Image: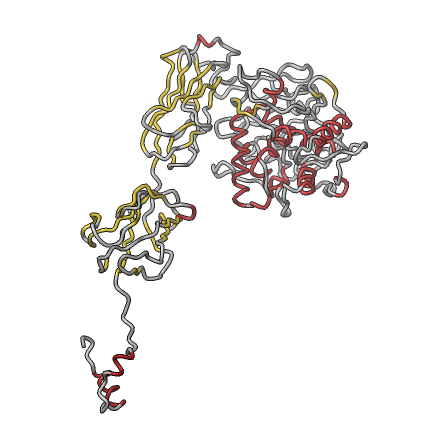
Length: 592
């Protein structure tokens, strides 16, 4: 079986041959990750990489077969959605963020997998149209559950219920669930908590994207290797046409993408395919009641998204998120902006803020106002900026009147600042969000080496000082530090003699500022030198947060050679016996 999901290619019918030809065309340009497809449509090497029957993440559910434009996408320079290429290259902000966070997690956990986030985007495109164009809430959960058809063997695989309807609302047969279309049995094994809310929800794009990434990386696959890449994609859905379609989108997204507001992603052309749940003309059996853990109500599969039972191809309309929903009010009707769930805005220097600023435009009666331009601005004495380096960005509200700003990236300067949200042209419609960047800190320092720090006057210390910073026992990287040659244990002012560092001009420097711990919390100081003043000195290193370490430095002349010189031997008394000389040596006092 070669299942399909919406069989239109932008302005024409898609066949497996067309998909194969498109992939072959990409391969001809030496596109990474895409291989030539033989005349029968079978991808090279795919025949021996198809998983066993029933072994797929989606249960071989249907999928969208729309192909991308063959030209490279170009970010829009004018108005959004200024053309097919630009529109197709736009990925909903929260969905894109989920893909990139999943890639970052896998880069740390399974670096040998080499998972590109564009592969998750390609699969998300063909499985759910990027969560129905990014119809997700601030936490990344789909506004309405995305359910595949009932897998009852009638045109699809037959998979008897495995989750008692907990995920898919069907206690008789399984259905693929969520933006990445996992069947419940696969989710039970691979489900992840990608957004740190303590739940593993297949309807959440952060959870689903991370689960998909780990699924694709299974069996020690290296996705930079073509054969492993094909095996991974085929393990998701056992179809050569599916492989070809995913590879096409993978190549397209690799050539460039840009972010669009949630809810503004391009949906596949065919939205009336009868096999697409909740949209088509053929009602399916009512599911069992909502599972207790579900964050969103389960839909009645007998209705399409516009609430109509049975036939017709009425254009789907998104649901409201509390309050009433009025279709497309004019922007002039905006009465106020309201916080749309933004939590505390706090991040450490150099980190990304986990919370994203989101507001909702409302009329006096509380109706949502879509298609309103909201300007987000970072103000105050801060170097924090939105992702991409902008201090201000403009976002258009979605169908629920919601606008979500891009991710905030904390700079290196700690302190308080404000993120302002206002409707363009409506000075009174404004919300200010207090935000804070806090300095990274360390409460302990330890030297990594144990060699004595000793030097002869006027020479260079042979050992460079390296220390490791920790905070509550954990590595503390990116922490500001200062190193000073102090006068004494009770006087932390800089010494005016003894060991020193060299400045850029070669002159002695006895206080170093602007230091910062690196990866693994390590800090290695520059070379140290000694002047002509012998003695014992102290070096003190202090970090932001109170971590302190004081080290002893010794400057002394080398020990004299204890072996008598020939001249000493010749001056000895001829009458002195060897035994008498030995006796005198051992009885000599330490001060002699």
